[in-house]
Image (cartoon, rainbow, N blue to C red; front, side):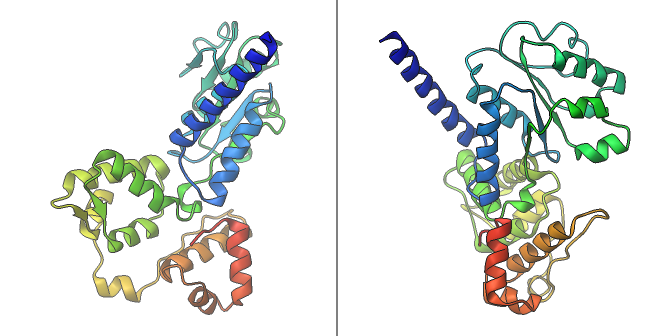
Length: 297
């Protein structure tokens, strides 16, 4: 009976942890659903975890979810903002989160790598804004530290790769701020076509500013562009000129293709036939690519 009670209690704890995760990391795009599944799979393992993603993708929230969904979820979750406590901080139970390992010196990173090798003690979850292999090549990340994770990593995709999550999250954050406010169709177009270099944190800040700037119950494109800190293009220019797709040197061909299809979909207001025509691809190919890249329109 005692084991049954303990098992039920653990099931309830995990159910609560899943609910907390979806609340802290909302989104329903295919890419985001896979990310949440990756968090849950990784949480069940005892190994240290590397969380990667651009700035603003909420890596701390992901680290907390990993902790809460693990067998250590009832123990403390602590954050190590620098290397001062690394030598002795691994004792006890729970999880230690290092939010930006690239800010540590290489010597401090090697100290952390040695701490990861010690059996028992607390679990480590570390994060970086940088692509790990590039960071190693540039000397900002110690190769021996990266080796310690041995495939135990969770990647948080940038907001621009999450399709309709931009609109869903914007509406959710606005509702939480003021449920009497709403976005009009043109303001949603502005949100969809923005690249969101600051990702979810930038979106939250933009919605907060827009809510403060709003003069009525409906937020229009002028308010959104002001909140984003950029001028509003004329109606004619918005209709006539397609968005520009910026590609960084070193981007994979798959990423280039995904972003081009995503931007064309946005320009076509989700019309798959128009997207196919603009890209000179078959409609079947467009449907397959949308499914492959998790672009929901």
